[in-house]
Image 1 (spheres, one colour):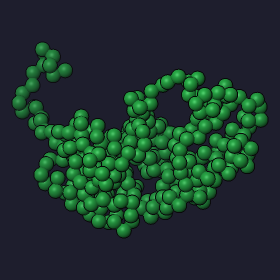
Image 2 (spheres, helix red, strand yellow; image 1 turned 135 degrees about the horizontal axis):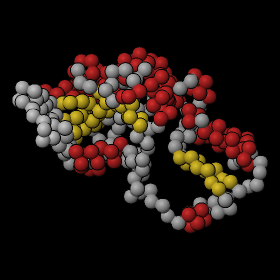
Image 3 (cartoon, one colour; image 1 turned 180 degrees about the vertical axis):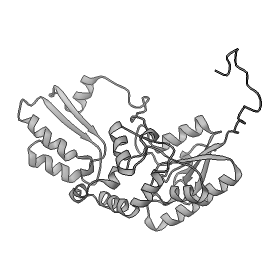
Length: 289
């Protein structure tokens, strides 16, 4: 509208243009380790440095394989290496580095994938006053029902439940203050809205994607033959963590009802997880192994 020929704008009406700052992207993951084919933290950081290196500074743990990382665009700090005893030192080092970057640059916000605890982003928001933007916000594994936690044989799942209970108030305080967060589905957005009172308009749904250079459709008949699945007319697939928190057991029980009919439908589960052994036992018990 301001470019319309009939529009005039005096200098006193014009808001001063705010100089462009930088974003910090914060992660606890060792991005020199490939967590699997497709989109993962390593690929995400590499793409961000490659495409937005002038706008984003990535603060990452010191890598275990430095030769696997892109040159430039990274600020490396003391790594947790998956050891609880190292985690406080990692949090302190990352906080100091963000504070140092804030002094050197004009930082607009800190984007982060929430890690083992919310302490670091909470401190950045409360002490440094920087807005925090959680990436791929998905916390059901921390705040699932007690029944789900008890059903799991996974030590990781039970530990996650303890973290959720211990840091619940910190998570809520942090998340209710975020200007924007993204998650992977409308159902997840509704759960986050009701669980943490995040205003719905601040939740952006970005469906899960995949690297199409890696995941390219091939010949279905050849694939079925290679995997020994050619006898099935239909195949139901699940790819992801094999844990009770994902309700894979419900999928197996539902499939049992399908298996009572003609044996023309197959179920393929792909993944790892602390409950894989229990799920394999359940498949035998249900007669669908």
